[in-house]
Image 1 (cartoon, rainbow, N blue to C red):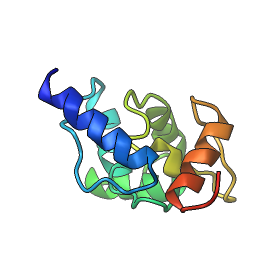
Image 2: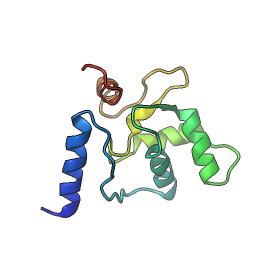
Image 3: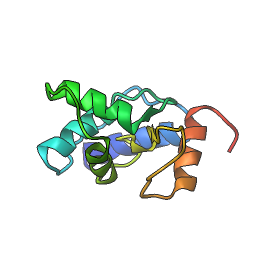
Length: 121
């Protein structure tokens, strides 16, 4: 088995046992430069925490040297994340704190966040 698969399996085993993995398998998702920038920002959201689309857009704007960035544009890139869970798009929520926009279904997003918070599933 290739090393990247072994590392990914170990990461997933740790994650789904309710532990925060202390490493990340090598990732090289295909996407536009903008999408890759958004996905790199998603990877900075701490385990068990959330940011709003607006907060993520401010971080992306700063990374790109811009004064602002459309939260909708960021949302589009978040929705095209090809490596869900490891690139934690489930940690991005609506401005009002609501769970919005998760390709795997909102019920999965809720379960992932509860798992990270150590809540009983």
